[in-house]
Image (cartoon, rainbow, N blue to C red; front, top):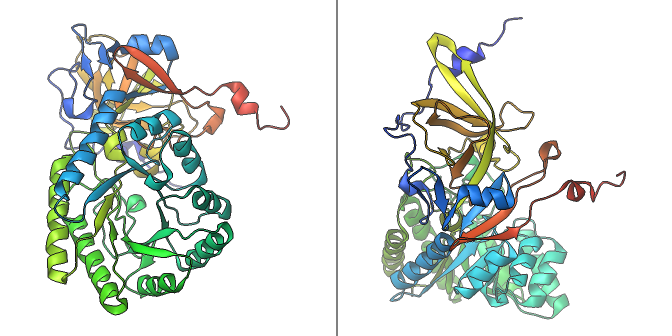
Length: 471
């Protein structure tokens, strides 16, 4: 049986076109790191007023580190810019997407800073409630909500429930009657937009699990069913077109289609729709190949689209909600690892790559394996005088796809015991972490003003065995 020449195949493109050989292998690429991060004179990475060696001394590796100043500043910037941009229209509210990264303490930051939150499970609802988010500031999403989670949402009085399917209309109406409340709801619509992103995180084309399709009439049917349900108050329509989107063209298309749907409903039923949900999905820079728009520009472009489309449709501009998660949490976080085995691997055509193994991997960052996410990395614990060498950062797991950073130039003398830092891991790393190979999940710690605060402690072997009835 012929063998597959994997080595030769993989060696054809040793590095992506955007990855340049650095002039200084110790330098930080500024846009990728939290705002308090910088390197000291000895090239040691410092964040939140602490050298990373001190963070590691206190909590070990691997560890997720959140720059509290950066996180809260990004959240405040989104809130300020969207409120400003929509002030002369119907107003706007920023709902932080809890699925990106949440803990009770992070929810407290959001509550203190006046943000709303969207959740998509009973667990997220419980966490943000314990963190002090007022119920009326919570929007509840999900394509298959359980009765128990919906009951809890109805009992505490969440501000909005986003209905995702025709059966859910009856489900929410039934439970609302049981609890004795009349909840405000929105309808999540699939509006047929193919956002330029990975297919796993594109969420508004018709052939996927989310939403009520406009094209086949499901959305309009849902409108009529909801208006005829005595226990529900229809507020508006919603869409989420995907994630890691770097321009506003797709959002402008979404505005156009949602506003047209809103106008159609208002003309046909006489029922004004006062809410317009535009979702999130704003891209962040994981590498130098990414160029995200600042919050101010996103807000101004989206406001201009809403104003123009509402004028054309002859309707009053509705109140707009947006749901940034990654754009707030992603750049505010980084992961610290300790280097273990370093192994040069010879490839075909005289090429070679340095495999740098760290003490984490796909259990703490599944995104690279899941949909080819790209990351950067830096030697964080010392200065190196060695030349840069093309490297791949890999983990401890028994999988060839256990890759943390696919391609990066690291110092040729990187060695066991060095600390490696990977930026932009604040979103969807802790949230999607697993115990694959029975590896305990890392802690989440916040750093600020020279202090470390543990937000979520490191799992222990006792934690791992707690549910094992044979232990």
